[in-house]
Image (cartoon, rainbow, N blue to C red; front, top):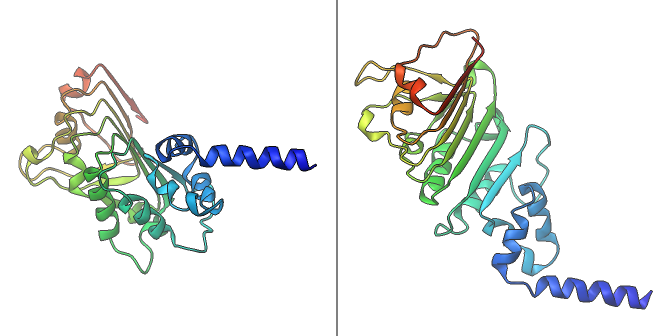
Length: 233
C-alpha cells in the first residue's frame, strides 16, 4: 500500500514538473468542460485551462453547473486571459438564453468576437439553438478576421455590410453555413452571403445548408470554389 502511494505521489510530482506550455498542450485534447475541472487539482492548475489555445464547449448537451462563475464569466476569463496568445480553435454550442438572457445584451457577443479577432483565431465554430424570432446577429468584426481558416455558423443572422470593401477573409478555406439568414447589401444589391463568399479568395470548400422555408439564389462564383455543396433544396 505504501509503495503504491509513493509511486502515485511520484507520478503526480513528475506531471507538475512539466512546463506550462506542455501541460496546456495536453489540456487542448480535452473538452473545455474537462479542462476547467483540472483547476481543482492544485494552485498550479488553477488558471492553466485559460491558457489552452483552444476552447470547445457544448452547452446544448450539458447544463452549466460551475458555482464559482457564470457561463459568460467563463468565456470572458478564457478570452481575456492572455491577449497575446493566438487561438487555434474556438467552438461554442449553446442555447440562445445562455448568451442573451435578461441580464445580457448583444454587446456580449460583440465583445467575444472582437476578442477572438484580436487573438488571431484560426478555426471558429459558433452555433446558437433558438427559435426563428431569436436569431443572433453576428458582429461585423468577424468578417474582417484575416487569420480565419475555417468558419462554421449555425442559425445566426449575417448583419448588413455597409461597404463590401470592409469584408475580407483572405485565409478562409472552409466555410459551412447551416440555416444562416442574411439580407441585401445596401451598397451593391447583392446578398450579404454573396458578398461574404466573394471576400474569400482562397476558399476551397463551401457548404450551405439552407432553411427549407426560404429560397436562396447563388451567383456563378459560388461554383468556382474547388468544392461547393447545397443541402436542403
